[in-house]
Structures are given as structure tokens and as C-alpha cells.
Image (cartoon, rainbow, N blue to C red; front, top):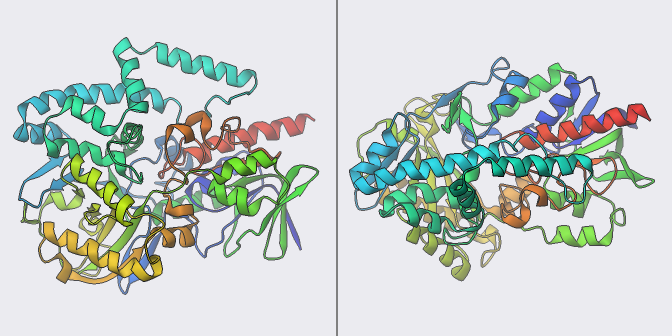
Length: 528
């Protein structure tokens, strides 16, 4: 049995849904195939304990591009985003703390610790914003393609003009943020451990590295591209969890005529005369002029493209695609709000991202432990309590918390099936050191190791970004030189997931940009 469409999309995660919407909005017939029973990929909301729901993998809103929100009319399709009342809360086990947020809160809090650091914060913010401003120009366009045509030459010229438009010191900062470690950058500006930790956390989120690793400063930038509820740089929560984003996207896509088929894992891409012409799934063929893959690059190249359909050097290169974020993700059901030693009363700080990693040295030790011992004995933990902003997630009087933890490698001594609960217990014990009584308030949990993230969501190596965000896997090199324009080394095949530019996070940008490439090629087909 065969179904036909203009475009077949593999995977109904958020980038696939964005791509499908833009294609259907231009009148193309689109079929999406999703292997799970629900759309959303890693941006889903699920019940994990009776009466308790939460975002299962992706867990907070900031990077979702505002143009995509407007174009897809996601608010009209039911999405509601509320802001954290405070962006970040960094407690220490010794009773100190630091808050970060809007309306001058960050600077006032830094000044409480160090007047010099408060002054330096202004210079740091200015340097950061100049570099992020340049990078934002390239979020919704393909990077120049190495070895490409006239369009790529023009892209290189645009990039060069953008860089030339920066002042000399801004150009130096650009080079620094792409090549230096987060510690190099932060030590230059700040003197206080807790202040450096506040900013340094962004360098290790989903990044299996020390803040002293060269290139880790780039990850500081990646987490600053977005906005929430129309506020640049803010962090928010989708009411109902991250799955409400992808449910709104699915409604928008279906309104344009997109057909979404669930419980339909793709077995293989159909290749005829050197071109992708469809996919097979469950004994059924879905054929189209173009095939778009919203999957991890290694899944695409190693499992879905038939053997022999690609040049051997391409296959070999993609086997070396670095993919490991050493992330352990856990949801916990709580009988009560956590109370932190450093700020014991319930308050707005419990709506924040709560960072338990008090210094860059602590973060470095977490990485060294993981490399030496197999997993971190003093892990880097971010906790959110989204039920403080959204009472739909838990029964009255109860709470849910998200725990996002580094560094827990994919390969762990004894294997994850044997160690998962041990590590989950260890993480809860660590939180209890900052918030005594937390352990006894836990009434249920869902613990996802890197192996679980791979098996459930197709995140190879448990990498939340579909591949490390290092210089060799960014911009024109994502997923490889010569194919950064979303067109893969097989005619008719495109990549629209986080393994393409600009990378990971719930941005929608890869899906948006891939749709532009598909539409451009559709126009060429019609002229032939």
C-alpha cells in the first residue's frame, strides 16, 4: 500500500512540525510519520506519577523563535507562556545565594556580593550582546555552504560585512567567545565565585565539558538567543508543559492540511536512481518528491539511508559525529514545596531555575569526576518547580520539580539499567543538602539516564542537542562542510532537526530554515 505527497517528513518533533507548517502553508501536501504515540519529540508533557504531569525532556521556554510563534499563530492555537518571576536562583550549601532577573535585579544582587563585579557586569553584558546580536542575524538563514554556489559566496560576503560592522574590540570578543573557555572569559570580568557560577552554568548545560574546556564559552552564547512571552532573554514556562508547544504546533500544521501519522516508525528511506523518493514504515510506502528528516544525524546516516546509497567517506565521517551531553533528566512528584537553607521562606525564587553548582571549580570537578569515575559525585543540578507557575501539573497542595543534571556519561560502569536508581537517589541526596527535607517530600519520580533519553527520544548518546555544539560541529560544519544548507548528500533528502544549523534547543529555527530550502527546490522542480 502506498501514500503519496509532495513532501514526507520523518519525525513529528517541534522542528518537524515547524517545517511541515511552512511547507503546507505554501500549498504542498505533507505527510509526517512519527514513531511514538504522540507528537512533540523531546518537547512533550506526560504523566509520570498518578496525578502528576510534567515536561519529560525539554523543560523550559526561551529559545523558541518569535517569528515562528507569530507565523504559526501558536497563541491562537492554545499556547500560553508565563514568565518566571525570577530567572535564576543560585543557593550555596553554606547559606549564601544569588538571584538573577529583570529590572536590574541581577546587577543589584551582584553588587550585594561585589561592587567591582557589578561594574564589570555592565561590560560583560555589552560584550555578550554584541556577539549574540551578530549570531541572531544567522538564526533564520542557512550558513554559507563550503564549496557552494553563488548564493553561498553572497552569504560569505554578508557574514564578512556583519563582522566588519563590529568595532575592533567586538571582533576580538567574537573570536574569544568562539575559541576560549568559559572560565577564561568569566575570570576576565569577575572576581567572585558565585557570580562566575551564575553565568558559567550556561556553558555546561547539555555540554559534556568543563568550564575550563576551550570552546565552552560559545555555549554561553547559545542559551541567550531567545525570548519568552515577548521579553528578550527571559525564561518562561508553557502552561501545561512543553508538550503544549508541540500540541499547538500540531494544530497549526493540521489546519494547513498536514497529515500526521502516529505509531509509524520509519524503517528505511526509499532511494531510486540516486534520489530519496519516500520512506517505508511498517510495510507501507510513503512517497514524495522530497524527504525531510527530523532525526539525529547519526540515526539518519547509520540506520535510515540504505547501505551503499552514500559515498563511503560520508558514512565514515558521520560515524565520527560527536554526540554526548552527559545529561541525566528526572521529574519528581513532591508532597510540598522545597525549602532552601539559604532562602527558607516560600517566594518568587522558587519559580526560578535553581542552580546547584556554586563555583566554576565545582563544575570542573564535576566533569573530572565523571571522566575518572564514570559519573559525577558532586553533580551540576538545575531544578525547576513549574507547579509554582502552573497548578495544572500537580494535585492541590502538591508540587512537581524538574531536575536537569550534569555530568553523567552514556557509558557508566555496570550499565545504566543497574545504576539508574542509584544515581537518581544520589541526585536527590545532593538536592537535600541545599533544601533539607526535600528527600522526604518525594512521593514519585521518573528518572531518565542518557541511555533512556536515547531509547525514548532517539537522542543518540543521550545528547539533547543532536550532537555536540563545538567549533567542528557548528555553523557551516553542521552537520558537515558542504551540507550546512539542510540539503543532505543524497538528492531529495533534507535535515531539519537540531543536528542542523543553528543547533539544539526548542528554537524551531532548523525546521524553518529547512522548509526554505525545500521550497526553493520545489520551485526548481516546477521549472524543469
